Amino acid sequence: MVKCLDRLVPAFLMLCLLSGCGSNSSSAPAALTAASLTASNFDFGGNLVGSTLSRSVTSVINTGSFPLRLNPTISGDPSYTVVPAQSCPSTLAAGATCTMTVSYSPTAASGQTPQTATLNLGLGNVSSNTPQTVALTGTSAAVSAGSVTATNNPQVALYSMTLPYPGSMTVSFGLDTTYGRKTWSQTTTVAGGQINMLVAGMLANTMYHMQASVQFDNGLAVTDADHTFTTRSLTVAPQISVTATPGTTPQSGVEKMNFNSGTPFRGIAVTDLQGNTLWTYAAPVPIQEAKLLPNGDFLVCIGDGSSQPLRGPSPSGAVAIREIDLAGNLIREITPTDLNTKLAAAGYNFTLQQFHHDITPLPNGHWLVLANTIKPYTDLPGFPGTTNVLGDVIVDLDQNLQPVWVWNEFDHFDINRHPMGFPDWTHSNAVVYSKDDGNILVSIRHQNWVVKVDYENGTGSGNVLWRLGQGGDFTLTGGTDPTDWQYAQHMPSFFSPNTTGIFSLGLMDNGDDRPFPQTVVCGSLGGPPCLYTTIPVFKINESAKSASLVFHQTLPVELYSSWGGNAEPLANGNIEYDLAGIGSGSDIFEVSPTSTPQTVWHLHSPSANIYRGYRIPSLYPGVQW
Picture 1 (spheres, one colour):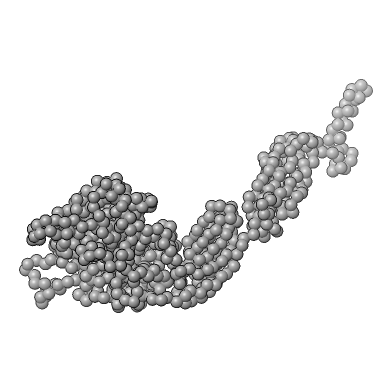
Picture 2 (cartoon, helix red, strand yellow; picture 1 turned 60 degrees about the vertical axis):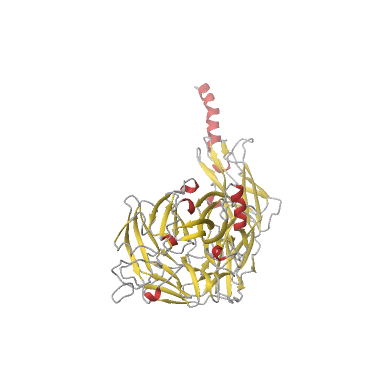
């Protein structure tokens, strides 16, 4: 019996040592356990002076059978601190896992040398060879204040900031520190990259407040100090007046207009809906089209008019397709001479005369350029001798402004069909891209047709797929044929989300050569006026070849617009149209899409012709003002 007890004593003593029997258990040594870390180093990346980044730097796993004691400390750069509320407890149960969170709050910029420290978990009851440290690394920088300087455009400021880390910048601006308007975001993908934001959309001769907001790719954000900038006076500005119908709400945004004749202003102008000028690009020659590109620049068609080649050399010599930024700086351009050289090298045997009317940027970065060429004919019916006929050419320019697809109207239409304007035979004025099939619509004014061309994103045959208008391929419903077709039209636009099959198409029907039945005497008592303009919207059925008038506003004689103009759908469901050629002036209307359209908003230009007018969201892609 004694021998048996002798054998039990060592075991009992061992249990006492482990459990602390007969003494205070807190002073007894803990049993060894095992632990592991999920990471032995952590890089906080970039931070800003005065900003705190809190990150989980490692996880601790108790892989043993007994509780694990922890006493974490950090040595090294004082920017690093353990976050107790988000970190492991002092004791971790067997089989459990916890996370260690450390904050990085630099008080000084690190420069080229990273700020480093060591997190020691202080694991108290593990073997001496158990890893229990994490190397901490981070860099920090101070954000320098931005600067605001003037540009060549009196209403445009240049806001510049250098970002220590990759990120994006947006500028808010307004008459006070509530700002009210914003630019879009511009980015830099490198540390130390500079962002130069052109801030546009301000009244002339006015002091503005502006402030940049920066969002870094690592999640940090900072706001610059408030800056003031005073715009300069305009040398010349458009003369317009605006009225809105009480009780109605115009579509928000700004109005972009192309003034190409008249006084006192010629060029591109953008106004707010009260008629205040916010931005201009003046030019001594007509600008018939200017479109905002996805990169925030404007694509501009500059020339003396499509019929100028029949009159002689261009009087200004300023003919080009030009890309400009909001300050008016030239980014790149191409002239007819440049393009003729490239076309000759590609084997084409015609010479372009004038860029005119339209320029269409495509989703792939290409530009569809509308130009014309002269081709001589001998003894055409009714035209004895030699007749120089002016027809149009569309050239697809790639991102390097190289011609990659060409469509020549002389190859596709009857030279002896010329309802008006011959020998200015076609006088095309618009090229519209159909996103659903990659084809294009071309408005051919002197043929009274809108035609669809097999373009297929640059791989098409160029064949004419259909012709819309009097003598074309469609049956007119909801109106009188031939009177209610379009005549001498301008600028078709899709009025439906889809662009193929069954879709809606609107346009400006100037009506210059509108025919009437022989039994009707034009202008007689009770008969139709001789000249009037309409705004039609057709429901097109491509397979059935039917065109049904679903909206058709016939304007009074005093609003007859003999040339130019466009019609566009607005986001609020209304319709906007520009009556460009009302004598020496123009009128732009926003109307309801009802059987008796109600005027919602009206802009009047008394002494200058606005070739096209568009309601655009703002001066920045993707930003609504």
